[in-house]
Picture 1: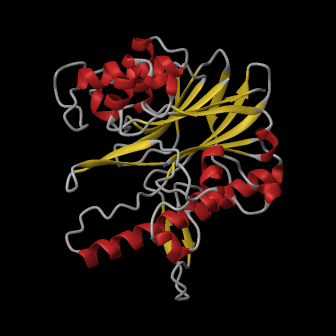
Picture 2: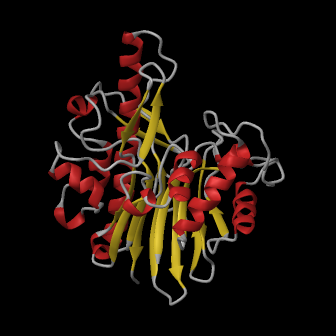
Length: 331
């Protein structure tokens, strides 16, 4: 089966409060992209993915008057996807939920939060070594899923959208540095919390997949030197027997100055150019590693099939500022 993760920028803007697609000429939320064009592009990308399960980061929001599950299932039915059933976890107030679309003929899934503290509560950790632990919360609590195949094989999935380190709102250099370091602390604390949950599963022998947008990666910024390791490296772990595996992260750790795989592309208005980086990962536990193959970033330029398929290449650029990451799991 194919497992994928995909951060869809402003997916929520494509639906009304009843979960219907707003397939019209209004602006989507993506820069200079109309809603109908983003919907058409997403239809092409999701159809090409043809995944059995897609962890969707920045999924349509849910609250008293809206249902992200209804919106996703409407989208899947409209496009004609096999992955047509949606599951969502703890609801947040950011308009960016974490949800999973899956093929109910192949898999069954349920939200199954385990461990303490729960991801919708608070975690206390002393990150600045002042003997006064800070309270850390997830603005987008990870989605913990118990998954079972039609043949009866079971495994766990955790969908992740870690804190962004970007200093949004900063106007001066000093303010930019202060906010960036503050955000980095919170992102690392979230990753430490997540790693503790990973170790709980590994101790129980649970086959585990951790996937999503970590807003981080090995060697990604200068603050990594200040804090020692990236959040991604923390979640992967250092003990070889308890390490999660992602080949894209591993390639950067082993060759930090070589060519870097990238999964996201952002416009820098002050420099009038794009910057590319690796933010999206699919990490697997040691017991699953031999059963996983064909990790792929659906990059419109770097992936030969995407590049040589003009319709898909353009759709990937229009649909989101991130590109899907997938791998195949043989169970």
